[in-house]
Image 1 (cartoon, rainbow, N blue to C red):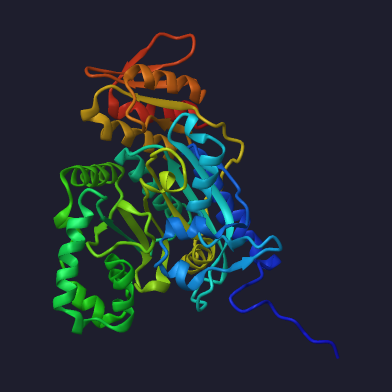
Image 2: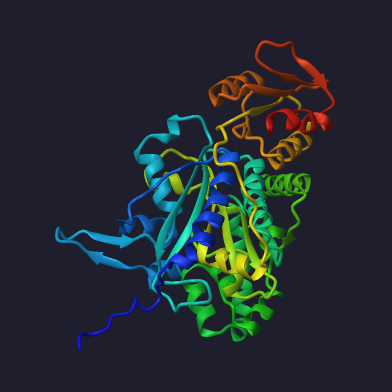
Length: 422
């Protein structure tokens, strides 16, 4: 009798019975949502040059040291199956000159990722992931938008058992001084660390915060917190992220030990985790990576994004036992563009933009710090037929062939939502 084969350990089949939840509900919901926020789809190769991941993830990271599927091809080149989505998307951004497009460039992809690790609940050696990236803006408002987008996805799928953990890990201006303080503490408390923590410290001291051993995590509560060492610029940036999240009504917990595991992260980091906690409950995680693009040969370019495993999302959806919202897939690219002249009211203006999106209206705004003239140019490029112009003294709606209509800011979503969402 012939040998009976099974799927390799750490892989899984998406059976016909799984397709309605997987594609018709979860993927369809994601695609409609990213369309509302102005993200475009990109696909990168399944394998890349190994050095792309070694240079960006860090040679001492768990991904590089323990988890990559690396092989030598027939021309003796070292290639690696994609373990994460950000570095390949940034490579494509540089290779195809997307820095010459209007910034930020908003991209997303669905793709299988490959990591050789012990299979976990909802995490496989080959697993599918949504990777969403906004490249070309250092604006804290784009951080908040990316986070709010995933928060809204959970809402649309009826997933409620989670919390959002948020932190800032600083940048090259303030992190070295913190690393010095952390190393001094680790030297004085080496007996409170396990072998894994000592190993991670040898490659990057920040990685000790990735250790999940309970007694180590308890000890690290006494370690210096990076939030206490942020420079003024990083502190201001993080305060801006929190301000916008507050304006969007997104609840979060500042978690001072949250650092993420890859070297390219700077400033904002976050995770959506299930209420049960633990490494196997993470639904998605992401952060800012302001030095990644220039590490791979591009111009200095800020960026931010996240990865979200679809298997974990599917499991959380099924546990929630609530139907996903239905969407009309025939929406246009951009219906309303928000132009903001008065920086002081920006959070309130963008909150109205989110309220319009809640009504199914496709909206966008500037995240590159442009002048009023530059924002108007960007509005024209967006193709949006309706502009909301928030000036110093008044807000007005501009539509083709009509005089500007002055309105109260808090009524923008109500006035436009009734006419554009139908």
